[in-house]
Image (cartoon, rainbow, N blue to C red; front, top):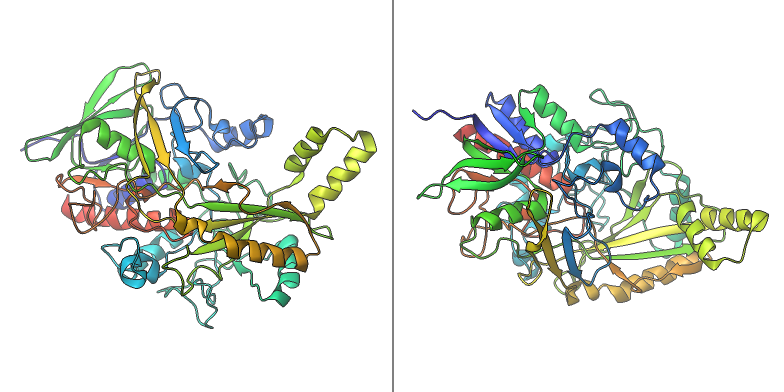
Amino acid sequence: MAVYDADVIVVGSGSLGSLAALELARAGKTVVILEAGPMVPDWKITENFRTSARKGNLNAPFGDIPYAPNSYTPGYLDFDADVGWVPGTLRVAGGTSRHWTGVAWRLLPEEMKMRTQFGIGRDWPICYDELEPFYTAAEYQVGVNGADETDYSGLNRGAPYPPRSKPYPLPPEAKPYALQRFQMRAAERGYRVDHAPNVRLSRPYAGRPACIGNNVCNPNCPIGAKHSGLHDLEAAQLAGATLKTGAVVDKLESDAQGRIIAVSFLDPNGLRSRLTARTYVIAAHGFETPKLLLMNGLANRSGMVGKNLMMHPTLSMGFFADEPLWLGRGQYLHGANLQHRLRSDRSKVSGGFYQFMNHNAAPAMAVALFKEGNRIGASLDDELRRRASQYMAIQLLLEDLPDPSNSMSVNPSFRDSLGQPGIRVHYRLKDYAKSALPRTIDDYSNWLQAMNAVPQELPGAHWYNQHHIMGTVIMGSDPSDSVVDKDLRCYGHDNLFLVTTGVFPSVSCVNPTLTGMALAIRAGRHIAKEV
């Protein structure tokens, strides 16, 4: 009888990998979590951010790690894209969800069946009802606050939607002042502002304190009120999982039947180790997971590994209202307008939602004033105060559709301190997203009038994207065009599972992390029954 080092080896210690490991450990399985990066405590992230001159670089407080470079390490990510933001991905204990915004949306049932409902994109091989219990489990595990009465389709049909088996574990926070003022003045033009469910605690929960409105949710909540991937990792360890940091997995060994028989990894000094398990879970996010598969020639009989990259095209806009709004008081991101999410023209125009950014506007306004260079002393102070107090920032997140031409691949021209290659991304914005621009400009014009505002950033001047990496190891029921099946098992490798937002066949327009968490819990429970 074979002797293994563990029942299950999980590669990647972010929220998704850690939640899968948590379920396995709770089921009594021996679990080893391998993490390429180091353990960096929360207090260190807060201090690094406080003293950093690179406030716009959310990766910076976690350090530049020669053996585990991140997406902002010069040269590591060759980003060939016509959208403006490089996704900020991390390789540290707790993963990229160490610096996520914390918004916790569910997909709608219709958004999981895009081909059936709208004749575009792809359907999930599971339906919403199958995922719903795991959405609930994820919400109660991480502490989501939300508005139970809200129709999150944006159609305002007078009943909660999508269907829920239990209420949110926590009630919503009060709306920040800036959002209250915007809501009051935009309502007369037919606009609603709904609460965005999120993982900032509205009251103490599971040993964490309630949010007190520090408004530094990114990169790190200084008191732990916002959920972090580190919380999931700590829970997995308390349940019995073993964590090994500084373990850069670069080799997956397989037998003639396609079963994975071992993982091989390097430590920061280049020393190699090898571990065996009955089952293997790769949870190294939507870039690193396909990179590892491509490096080993695995799970790619369909040719879809690294293809179908989706990142939520984004339009950013801003204006100066005729009254002080004082962004930066209260929660970082609280409210959303969902009225374009599930429109009848979804087959032709990308579904989208507006999120109202409640981050401190003073740093950006200061940079603009310094560039103008025509004010000093009291005049500079007064103008900075005026602009920062009256500014409103809004983003429109749009749905992407899977397209194999949008992709990531291994970049051998980059080598880190261990000789490992980098990542190359090719991404082009599609007409489906661009078609949302005319109505976005209409909305922006209405908001300018409602707020008697002076325009600052016009939507469409630049296209952006989010830090959401999806589709690169796509899920489906047909092995000829998919990488994993409905249980996240790789086609051709019956003991290899991928737990990452990279499996999404459709992405809606909303943040993907809660859906990824639900999939991770579902996969962990499924694997536990097999091992």
